[in-house]
Length: 410
Image (cartoon, rainbow, N blue to C red; front, side, top):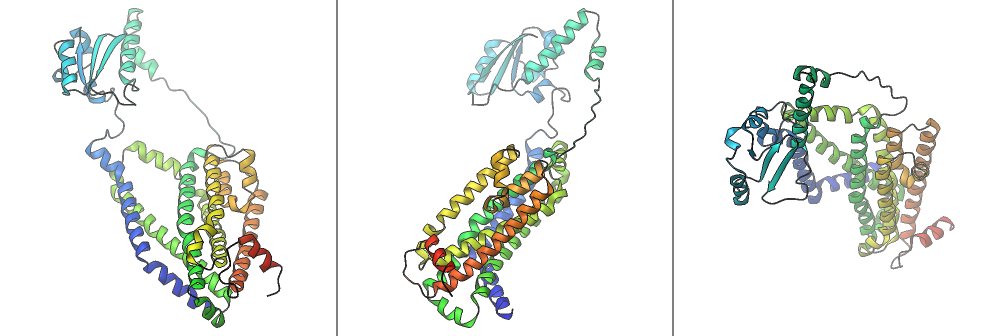
């Protein structure tokens, strides 16, 4: 146990002292801080805080920016247009848009007909139907007025509330989608970046011949498990620091958030299943770290690490693709099968459990199967590491090595 503690402490300190780890943590902390502050900064320095519409704006121009020409002055007054943005003729407005004084110009002939001038039209320009909706509302009110329905009566009809009773008998995916997406993304990035670190750390000892010295002073079990747990712990520490910085930034700028964004965050960030995410995050990290450790034990040179880990990287990317598809539909046959395969289940099962109704026996069965695979790959990586002391310079072939390790006496 003492040897394991020494290995763990040494590898952990090595990880957190690495320049790459320190620099990446600082960069990600700054990114988390900016991302958490962005809604408040956007709202304060340029955005429309609370998604203003023409109903709450003092002038129609405030919600639908641009220059205007209206043939009927009475119509312009009814639309509540700012006179400073009204042009004397259609040609004047067209010239202002052409000169770049206005990015867009609207010529309103009547409630049912208007024309738009663009200086430069982008891909998404013209998709905003706000002005059409405003004119349509006025047109409806005018038509109803002719039929004896006053504007107040029309507004009362518009504000009529419909009582809706809703009861979710299964999972409410709307409240879990945000956290599920964050889980998939973070696990993918962490394993993608940390897996090669473990493989290289193991391969370096074989490449520099220090493996022979290490294996005579302590059990290979202490070396492999110590390395994997040290890297895993360093990853958790890095995630915790970045998450804490992001959360503190959110608390500082929260008062400047638009109410709609706060409501959306409250709806999506449901932490009722956080235990499920943490459990499978740990299981997924341990499973893939031991697999990468086994692959690193196979090669004799650091240069061969990338070719050795390529198959498992492809498998992991496939797991990510299935998990992302599960976010869209967690009830497909592929998703159900993948939630039982440990390589995929560490990503798929918590997402499926969060977004759909999953039987308890499926969760327990998938969890137990994943733990069994972690144990098997831990044993395999230890045996390959021990076997590697007697095999240098061989061309790496993971399946051949596994066959020799498993069916030979050591």
